[in-house]
Length: 63
Image (cartoon, rainbow, N blue to C red; front, side):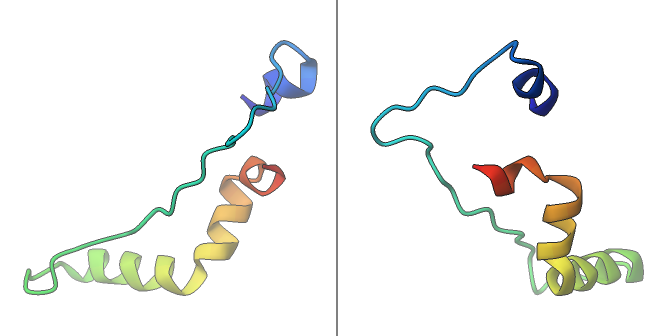
């Protein structure tokens, strides 16, 4: 939607109580045995979540 906003094909409506904000959680079962690749992903994402979000979801910062 970032491109559509930029081109003016859609617009944001300013309404009381909006935008709705939500906290996203990365969850997993601690007792489950995960592969080394899954463990590495969880560790990497946990350590770098702010950088990952700003790089791959830059429009979230504008809201």
